[in-house]
Length: 166
Image (tube, rainbow, N blue to C red; front, side):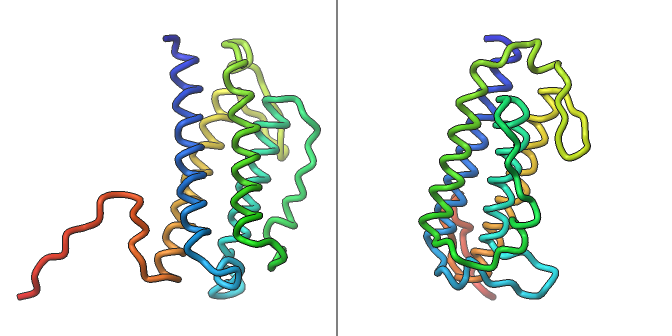
């Protein structure tokens, strides 16, 4: 295996794993919970999903894949409903699958080339690393919000053992 294939395979695995975790969270929440905000400075789970979809589309599908940049970033945060949990789960899953389909075709030259998005410049490696890290961070927020909204153990990792109280 080459270092390029190791990077691309790891990125694919992480993005798919996080997408599955988001789908599990969405499946535990009602549509009202998905769009609820604790306060005006907080993003709803639905907004975070739209934000991740826009980020992956802009950086990977448009940037690395050469598709037109159709992102409307402000709408990711201003949307306050109108999409069901099923629609959100399908949207993020389709976008991630479209993005990871680009990865196997990338060469060492593509990974060292310079890309531009959001008035920033990044190498292909930086694009992939930033998208995976960003996706993981917001997935963690979605998991935390889901646990707070439902009070449930989501079964994403081995459950903690409860210690007897003294």
